[in-house]
Length: 159
View 1 (cartoon, rainbow, N blue to C red):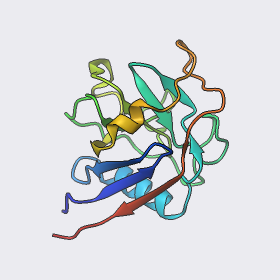
View 2: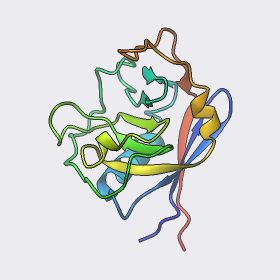
View 3: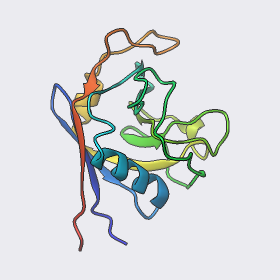
View 4: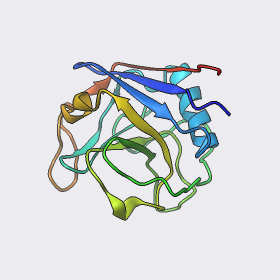
């Protein structure tokens, strides 16, 4: 399998390049690539952002964290990947098999999430732009007038 797949998020401050971990979470990577190619993430808000913890986005339907795509939820693909600064992981509801389209990017190390959420990517460059995403309420993370993913695209470099 090829490990050169990337997701590029265009934000108002600059581009974020994420290496997609196809070998670790193939179904989650495939879902994110499909949604990006369909424009699902374009103009999608970072609806929940907790300073020092994570920035969550990916609700391209309702834009507030209550929606997902029209595709079925994914079965978890937990791995030994750790939630460290720049880790990209799928958000989910209480069920471990409820990830759909929403994901979050960790601002720092969050070991309590290890083995609980499916890691599918790592920020290669542009983490400073994630750091600049507008923060939400300190406890709920809810953001008034949140920053957006202007556009999302993927690349596949077959080696």
